[in-house]
Image: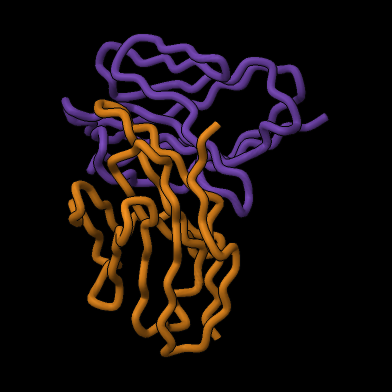
Length: 114
Length: 109
């Protein structure tokens, strides 16, 4: 069964450093998303990406965040200058069927900012 | 975005049928009702989607009354491995998913 893969599974970084979280969505999918979940809290939407541009973003997704689909297979989330409060599990998701609310989520990257 | 209300937690025993009810009084015409499951330290996993009446797949059934202001997820014959958080969402296809706090289902032996 096709799946969304994310790397790394765990990233530890120092406050102020840049991090790039990587995702390989399912190959024929057209819609891509990033979500995050702070430990013990809700899953929060960050951004959606379609047709090589951002289609929606939340208030969390400020100027410190950016997304890219550099080569037609990878989908990346960059945090320019990490803060302690960016520590969370980051999930990439993709969907491919129009008219469906089914999104396929990756296993997540646990980001720890120290 | 329509808000959903569901129980914080439920307990059940192995082999029983579990019904989790969700209310969504302000659901919009374009919204579908969709349910996701999440295990600890894993991404959410889609279970089922419906617009109205009843939908059934290999793992669950979804009952939606005519007014669409509520829905019930039915899990037949649960096992210990069904212990997870279950989220009820109202969502427009291809757009962002808004997760609430979900229902923690604990299946006991």
